[in-house]
Image (cartoon, rainbow, N blue to C red; front, side, top):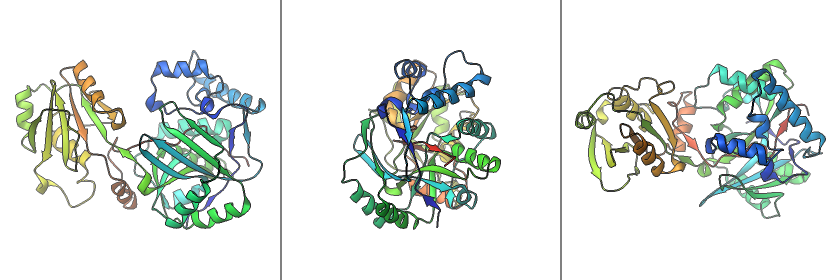
Length: 398
């Protein structure tokens, strides 16, 4: 079983939570960031993403100064006793309800907390430096667990009381939080939560990798904050692609090469795939549906059969010349939560480009890849809505 515990969270006290939380930068452009800095003095973005003329060497100092100022002015306050935090997020018609707690880094090292993404050393170090600077984790690591009926029923019962926080965030997602301090309720939650055998990282691979580094520097900092939600409630959007050009091919040459591997059909409206191994394609104001027809080429393993690998191996690499999706400047990634109209606009702004819409990766595939200690291709999963940074933060030295 996994070592999951309540903790003394630090949370908004003399300021509205919606003014403190740091919206996901995935939903923000530079103008939004500057606007938030100017309108909300206490916002956690001043710690996570300072803007202005700061030199790199001054950034950590400024971040720590702002965090200390928030505490000294009682803008935020640490709970006097340990808590579990029940956390509900609503976005459009989707609702997910889970909990905030701390988990032991040893369970990540022992692969009870499983990841599915490749991480990069430079980003791990940057995250570790950022957290060590204030000895605090501002954003939880979003994890999923296999549904546990007893736990989910208990969580639902606890949400029948009045919440401690209830507000709408920048991206129009709605966030509700219950702080569970009653010892009997904490014991009930502890018994149910610690029946979970594995956790699966949805978002926060670099954050948890940074926590591993931090625990190696200071062995007393061996817990980290998680936001855990049932598998059935963890929503994954499609993660779409826009390629800058057709790799010096004419439209007819491009379509001809596509048809070696896919059934290609013109569509009268925008096309969103409805099943696996089906894709949408947009070029020159025209949508197409693509259906993979060479299934005999696929190996009998989960990675080979992922839609994104099919698109990579039989279109992006051999036809469009995208060999390294992480570093090729000809490719852009658009989360499905932004809608197909965003793909259309990107292509219409650059008529040489082509866009591909994908069917969302299924959470079961993410879990299977993690269970096999494999790595998903880059930019495969887009979990949304995400838990907020700064609603509850975890100070290590407690």
